[in-house]
Each structure stands twice: as C-alpha cells, then as structure tokens.
Length: 260
Ligand code: HEC
Image (cartoon, rainbow, N blue to C red):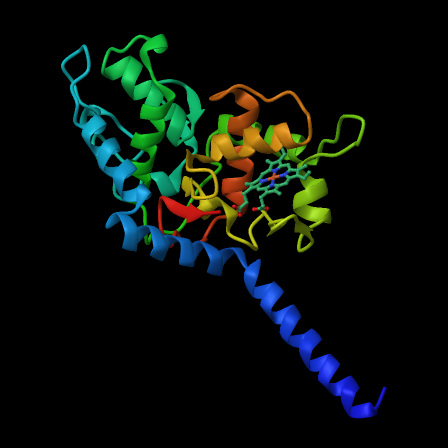
C-alpha cells in the first residue's frame, strides 16, 4: 500500500468512528427524539403526563379533599421546589418519604383512598406534575433527623453490597464500570458526577414508559437478577436518600426528564 493510501484509510476510519460515536451519544439522541415527537404529535408525552397529574392533584378524594391539602415538605399545597428537597423526614408519619411515597401518604391519609385503591400510574402522573415544579431548582437534601441518617447509612451499605452468582452490586456498574458502555448507554456515575438524580422522573422514549427513580432502581435490581425490593419499600427509599444526598447541588434542568 502506498503511504497516502494509508492517510485515506485513516480518514475513513476516523470519520466512521465519529459517526458511530454520534449515533450512540444518548443525550443528542434523546434531543433528536424529543424534536421528532414534538413535530409529529405537537405535544410531548412528558407534557401529557404532567397535565394528567395536575388533574389528579386537584381531584377530590373520598374525604372531599384534593392533594392541595397535603404537605410535600414545604407546607400545605406548596409545590415550588418541593421535589428537589425529597426524600426527607416527615413528622406526621414519622418516616422518611420520597416523592412517590409522599403522594401515597397524601392519597391515603388526607384524601381517604384505601391503599389498594392507589393506582401506580396515578402516583407516577402526580409525581411528574409535582416534579415539574422543581425545574430550575437545585437538589437540596439534608440529613438532619436521626431517621434520615440511619436510612442514609442503610442506603450506602446497599449500594456497595454485592450478591448473586456474578457477585455484583450497584457500585460494580456505577463506580467500577463508569464510562464503559452498557450496550448503547454508558454506565452513569450515579454518585454525583453525572447528576443522575436529576434525570428522574423521566419519560423513556425507547419503550414509551414513565418512570420515577423507584422504577429505575428496581429495574437495576432486575438487571442483576437480584430479587426486586417492592415499590415504596425501605431498601428503595434508603438507596434514594443515599443517591439524592450525593447529588446535592445538581441543577434540575428539566423535570420530568426525557431519556432513552
Ligand atoms: C449490571 C450493571 C448495573 C448494576 C449492577 C446496576 N445498574 Fe443502575 N444502571 C445500569 C444501566 C445500564 C443503566 C442505564 C444507563 C445509565 O444511565 O447508567 C443504569 C441506570 C441507573 C440509574 C440512572 C442513571 C442516570 O443518570 O440516569 C441509577 C440511579 C441507577 N442505575 C442506580 C442503580 C442502583 C441503586 C443499583 C443497585 C441496586 C444499580 N443501579 C445497579 C446498570 C446497572
């Protein structure tokens, strides 16, 4: 081969690698998909779910009360920035609650729904609506109460724990493998650098699903063939508090987010 032919080959390989890199840049791809959906539908799926959540928020429950009677951490009916400060300890339940579980608390304790009447799809829609009021806010989660500190410690322990035949845990993928690719997506540094806490709740265009962080974490447990902790359960809340605290200061660019 003549020397300049090598340059030609190198140029082709370089162009190819750029093309490939572009194809798998998840953020750019998400932006493109968002544009596409907006052009075809005129409205984004995230906006539809937020609107649905708003309707549910102002729907009266069996007690005659709407969710505006509930305290999401900043006082009755105050939603601006509230989701960016969750999970947190609530005196009325004596528990640390995240957005999802606080919505369930509101529906059952204030609105008078029976626990079995609480539909997951409704909780997610309301979570989308409340989270939308924190766009532009920074994550600000604190460990003031002993209950918060205890749950954080449990979350940290669960995050670094490993189990199963492959001896893996959260930290295997989200600390050790950070930057490597998991199929299309790179493993995220969920402990702050990638501001992962701000990516959920989100609409996933790849499979048309609306997920909160609870769904995201449960899916990760599924990936490693580990029994999935139930929704609203202590292990999920513990991991959430641990992750949220480590993402303190991160700016919420857009809630709900739009991801692959
Ligand atoms: C086998 C590898 C693997 C393990 C183990 C794993 N995850 Fe994941 N996780 C992924 C992949 C792949 C994604 C999607 C790509 C990404 O965002 O990192 C993801 C996404 C996430 C995200 C969203 C990141 C973002 O920026 O949107 C969080 C948070 C998360 N995982 C938490 C956990 C927790 C908590 C555990 C332990 C219970 C865990 N993961 C275990 C592979 C794993």
